[in-house]
Image (cartoon, rainbow, N blue to C red; front, side, top):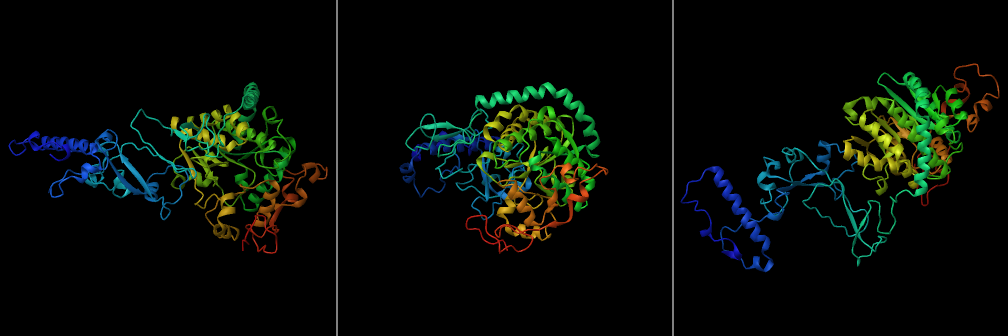
Length: 562
């Protein structure tokens, strides 16, 4: 026998004995297993000694019998076709022509192999993994594990898949010192977090004792006043909710009030005042409460939980005012959801083109998910795998979402440690999807319905259509990815999306009405809301309603938008 393969005298004499079809299949499987084990023992020199004149060499195995307990076959299917059949919820970049075009399917049992392609997909079907249609590839899969992975940097990354007690997390290791820091190729493998980079930076450092104690203080205050706050809030929610039990939630302080007012004025100009009836603004100061009500918005001033929020706007992403206002975003959503309502949460730096709720109510468009997010666009490790933007999302009330936002409230120390409500929320989303089956959908950045900062800075062709009013699919625009409020105002004005009269910017209700008595129900609509937008050029390299080529650039090396 060649290379230690069993001699024919060791086998069942099929020619001398009549076997049933089932018995023949058992014998055939036994022979294949024995051959596979022997081939696995052979090195290249053994194989080179094989008699090339042998008319019936043993069949090559794509995967050896040592892996047969968890890999029975494999196939390649087109990524775009696969994700069209299975909505993973995560934002998916197109695969065709990118070098990331295929999905590798591994079949754990023979019964899971597709009927039409069983002979080529099976481990003994040849050394090359075949490409087959996605629908056929999945036809016998009763359950499916999907692993999303890529090389997070320029490291020489490897991947090990081992048959073992089930894990729903990917364990990460890197060669580094102890404790792990920068990549050191000569060192041993050390366990690292999902946020650890080869430079030694860790995007997911745990909260400190200071962060934890600060969160304890917030929670103590929240629990102390919970019954009083919810008793006051319940009748307001009942009045504000639409006929599907949805409330549109915003939170704002005096420093961001211009953006809130522009949102309300632009919605009125587009004939969406009836939708504004379902907006509830969690004002963090009395000045904002008065301004919102003056434009016809419902308000709730939760002084017990939010009364100590800063009145000034954040000067930059992650500064103290920004981080403190993140707590307001947590509390307002958690309360509304906990009391049994669906909700659309949105930041104040948003304008509507059409009623966004209609998208989520149309399940032919939106599907059946618990929570929907605008794609942030920054597909960085901090936001993996969802890249969910926490400034615009829709939530269906159920036990899963109720516990999600209660968990986020409990984990406020993560927000303090990372200076990011978004990063903390995404981290919790991942676990809740795994533990409780939370169905998360991110509305991808390559789609056109919910544009934001990514589109503004990265998709010029799309923005040219949007500013010219030729993008009918868009429901909203969210001025995310912007350094501070000053730039948001300039960008909105340049886009032709600024509907707030300059005399109302930075003013209180009393200052706008010049101290006169408020005698109308909507005292700020007439003096503050413009029938036509203010259009002003600031930067030639940013989207603009009209040509701004005579203006300076804001980005280094920026090229004219038009």
